[in-house]
Image 1 (cartoon, helix red, strand yellow):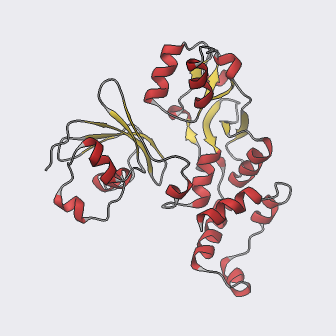
Image 2 (cartoon, rainbow, N blue to C red):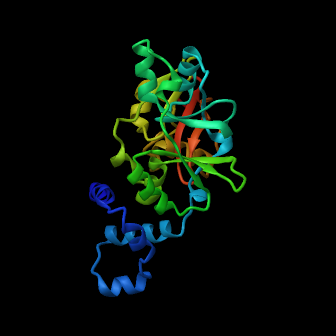
Length: 275
């Protein structure tokens, strides 16, 4: 089903799809006219919800934006990418409000490897959008422009947040389906201090193979599949950015990236000792 939705999203006609989405009928009317499967009805409900959402509902707030100064040297850039691995980074001159564009992690790493590192030459055009813009309208605008990242501005022109095509896609597809959208297998990055940066989609069995066995009997009996699921289970909710969640074994999970509905990346500290 998710592959069908991906194909549908890629096939949308930017010239008229926004109007069509905004004109989606109430559920009762649609169900009278169409014979829908549960999956199709669920996707239609998601579109109805997205129809009323604005950029402000989905953006990463300014305080959580990881950006690069155009004067950042190679060593510092490598350190930032290792600790905060994202696909794209805004680039600024003096401050974030003076953003000049964005760079992709792929281009930056390639330039460092080829010894041609120069952030200014790697910087690409970035979009600027108001926080009141409709989410689906921005999605279509980003498809037309081919620019995958936007900076969100407030009424005074200051930077209020950041949003990417991936952020919007997660909202459209919905929770629990993201694994099928992943281009790469969930991974673990080991930092120099021994801590691990872990993709929260990583399956707990795979994580324990690399980190060591530490789950309790009770946790093994729960319906927990991923590292993100375990963290939410321990916290009893979706934790906030930079929040540290303790496990009874002494292992700590620091939230590096999360949305209101799911944990995306965590930093793991401590020694795994089976409980």
